[in-house]
Amino acid sequence: MPGPGTGATASAASVTSTTAAAPTVPGTAIPSPAVPPDAATVRSVQSAPPVNGASLGRAESAVRSTAATGPGTVLGNRYRLVLRVGSDLSAGAEFWRAEDTILQRDVGVTVLRRLPADEADEDPEGTARAGEMIVRALRSGGFEHAGCARLLDVLAAGSPGVPSDVLGAAVTEWVAEHSLTEAVAGGLIKPLRAARMVQQLASAAEEAHGRGLVLGTDHPQRIRVTRDGRAQVAFVLPRPGLTPEDDVRGLGAVLYTLLTSRWPLSGSDAARAGLPSPERDEHGAPVPPSALRPGVPVELDAVCTAALGSHAVGPAVGRVHTAAAVKQMIGEVVLEDDRGAIFPPEHDGVPAEPGDVWQNKTRKATPQDPDRRRKLLIGLSVLAAGVLVVLGYLGVQLGSMFGESSGPAIVVGDNAAAAPNPTAPGGPAASVAVSGVSLEVYDRTGDRDNAVDVERAVDGNPTTSWSTFTYKQQLPALKPGVGLMASFASVEQLSRITVQSPSAGTVVEIRSAPSADADLKDTQLLTRQTLTTGTSTISLADSQPTQHVLVWITKLGGGGDANVSQIDELTFYRAGL
Image 1 (tube, helix red, strand yellow):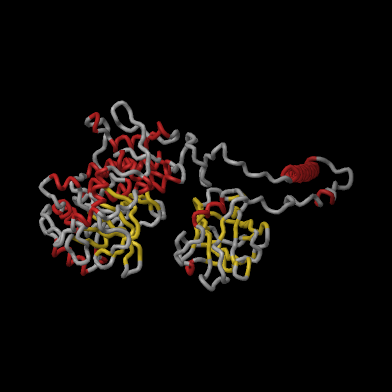
Image 2: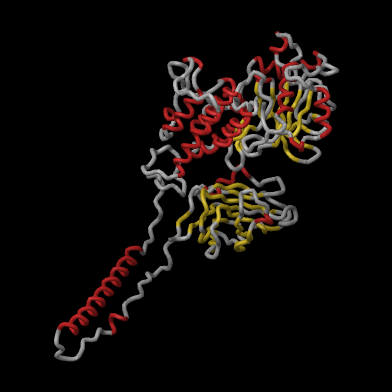
């Protein structure tokens, strides 16, 4: 079944209440709530707004009209619902970000609702459907994998603290970074990076299927992307009829979406997630990713096509039916990329990364040293003088060996020894700005200053900027500091940092970090400097190579009750070769 395991972290109280209410035989209905909600009262409840602005169909509206719970509702006397982030109508499931009021942390909660279809079959309350889903969740308690959010708790209908309109709920770790929609909203993702993002998800599906479980990868709002760039199943309790082959199609759909920003399976699920649907061929199958985006390798085209298949044309030639096959195909593509490309790739519309061997022709050329020509002429002159000295010396030696001396020995003059120093003026080779810098606000107090504007500090445009909040008291009165965590595509040896800022008096510490989310105590102080108005240059000549650099503000500019620091542009320079 869905997801990762409960393990030892599930609360004893909720597990006890769950197992007491839940049957031990799969498919047996969990008892319906003792006090069903009054129909008139339910109909008067105002439904919550649609997700991502997508219009909801009549079926979902019917489900929502029966929901008396909403933001602020506490489930199991512990989990407070905060924000509904999605729904899987076919499973009668809603996805919520919630707060664990005991451990004071965010969690993900999947809430089961009644479906209109339940009234038309032999399960009018939907308890048999929900009961089977809850039992499958309990059986997945020992399953944990990096491709799934860990299952923490399971709540059955009728358990203490579970509202009468909720048929069950499952609690998982909160995947805090991005939904699948948000992950592709910022622009195209490099094809090979997209493949790496799906690797762990395919591995999780393979292991789950080997244990008789199903994850539910075929719904876009069940998938979220972690801080380190892994696609992960974030919400559990998929519909009872789901099969491992549906998971395989889901893996192909996730990869397809990361490559094209389009969801190729259910059109209603795509609309609900705020994703467009792709164009389709004459058989109704989605067109290959390369048809929508030039530069997608043919191998990734094959992975998507083989995993998605097409019900319209029957069994497809070359279609894969197992998660293990998808994992192997993606693994081979990634391994081949790791071995290094021999030929330049086709342009895929994404700027080249710093480590790329084949750079984008549209990428801005590195500015040349204006003294380069003079340096070259001096170097050539020194080399010519050295050659003449060596030839003169060899001539003298050969003459003394094979000829008769008729006069004093020839002595090489002092002028040659006084040749210019071969070290060209101007110091070491000019350093180069690091491109493709990822930037985020670093603040352990939980209230990140103007996080939506942070990319303006590394967009190459000094007219756009990021700033802290305006504080009435100077740091560290309200918080120890505010930082910008920069991450590079690979480890870099930095020579200096330039900071363009109008906030004179701002004090910054430059720290290397082992990871983007490292605690401040785990970072290493490299240098400290007070910014001046305009451009401030911070030397990192003695620093060690690093992939993450924290610009930590310990004192704000301004003064009085208007303490604020603004950064127009932050540039990192790689040490010259």
